[in-house]
Image (tube, rainbow, N blue to C red):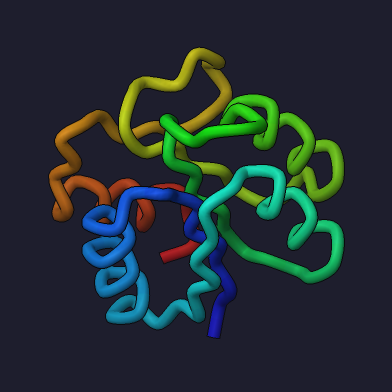
Length: 110
């Protein structure tokens, strides 16, 4: 089972994405803060990270940069707005769950 971090403080987004990811066969660790996502990537091996673009504290973009430094092979997907950095995959709000599912599959981990 592939391991994923789902980083968001939006309970509706977490509920929807958690179900999709579990249905696709992922083990999902759900957290609220991007800084915690960075810490978790430092401690464990993850196959995928999804970061809500509207977190508080450490920005999603900064967290992604740190994660890519620590684990360059871990794909990062921003949910909620277009990513400011061209190298990140993103899904705009409101999130179309079918489009998101296809995006996850297209990254090559689905």
